[in-house]
Picture 1 (cartoon, helix red, strand yellow):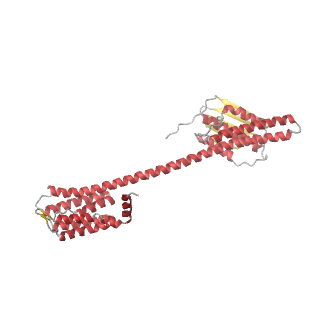
Picture 2: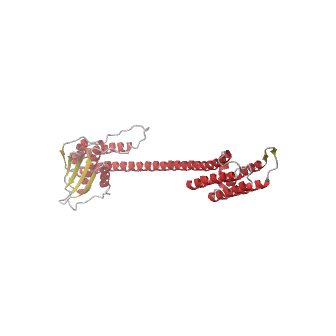
Picture 3: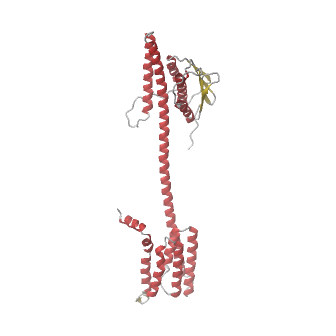
Length: 393
């Protein structure tokens, strides 16, 4: 591990030692400054050195009470400047305290005290020296105080900026993960809906055709043979659609498999033919001027008709069903009705079919309503947009 990183971690666990570290070089500089004269070096003035050390003592708690430490060190430094006006030391403890206050406290407090400290130090220097406060030495002390405050605020602003950038990065990462989970959930729901439509439809037809074959096997073997042929065709279609749906789960580098194109309204004849083969007469009527539909609308319309007829075959004990496709100027209305008798035996449905129809329609901006008719039977009405609105980002 980097030595600097270890050192920083150690200081972070020992706040008081970290706060007191600047006092060591300050005391050494103050001691050296009192030992310098025009004629050379002499014995340090220990009284001034002791007073400088006393002014550095509050720095031990500078990060805990930055404002109080700044006021105490300023008072001690100004006192030293007053009693020892010819001392070559600069009120360095006050500068460190100002930096800490600017780095830890509010901006307004830091600048008010920073400017006040600069004025006070310059004024005391001017009052204890023959030189004007606006001279080079006076302005230098003024600039030191302002620079300490500005440096503390700059470090604080940089730390806050890094913290905000880190928070934005963490938020973006969480948002990205949540969006990925949401997309995975939506995809799972969509695939489950497709599997439900495919399996429920084809298994219903296979079950009905198997019942017909069982009934006719002895009495009319030829018709039973035809029913078995329909079972074969329906099961093959079910396998093809299942293979195409499961194929959506493949990775891009998987070996390509058989992927049938998504069904469209032009495939309704084949769909209806399968129901007719099971003994359920289905009549399809198209009204209005047929307009081109986007693939999503065509797939949704096909699946809604498929699910509605499957429910009719499974649960309604109906003798016929009607499908009406009404092409309007802006929407396609699908109406599927049957003559299921009130009180007829109902299959053990889960309700997923109706939920799936509503979800499919809502996904493209459409609606589905379903319920029994007053005159008997059941009706499903779906309104689907002819074109999808562009997605706004």
